[in-house]
Image (cartoon, rainbow, N blue to C red):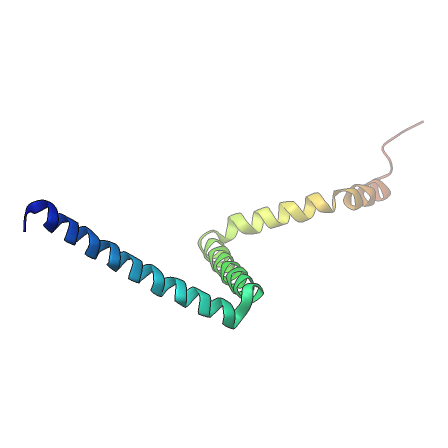
Length: 98
């Protein structure tokens, strides 16, 4: 058998192995899809990503509690800025003298 025929055999066996791997993976996905459906797969993926994000958030808070606490405090103060201003004006007067 010459080199070209040998290479052809090697390429065919590589192709057949790749097709067998693809068919196995495709069959597993198809079976999984039939069992859980598209909605179940999407829900599982979203749940997994949300859990990963929560774990990451917990890690950040554990590493930098002061920065997170300061940011949270600043956000709360910013959201309540108008009621705080109104309370200060009631307490000390409007600041306008006529």
